[in-house]
Length: 171
Image (cartoon, rainbow, N blue to C red; front, side):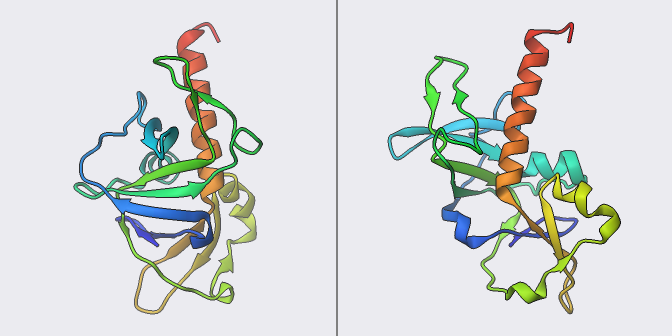
């Protein structure tokens, strides 16, 4: 679970290889959505969960906190597209993706039956942005189950579209 000011976001622990707390903001990319970092002698992408949640759900980053979650990727195969580092044109390995989050991270173990589908009227719209289910725990605020692979794919698409728009301003 990653806690932000507006809500808690639950992630599938099975997708997370490892995590670290980190100070500062060294991995911020040009538009804040994507960057790259060294990991096990490879260059891997860094996706900002803060920026995704801010863009789609109005969530704000928490100052002075940063966790990096290392998520199983897919290498060059679908669903993750290949990414080129802008500076030297070298390839970025997508077998592992780092997800940067400023929320306070905590490990929870929840049975699936505690998650509820989102209301039918907003289910498809929210699922397109990575929110899959909701939980209303007693004594706590709302918790959303978020699909990190959807967040990663949307962040990469947003990054590529923004780069294409910057390179072709007539589009």
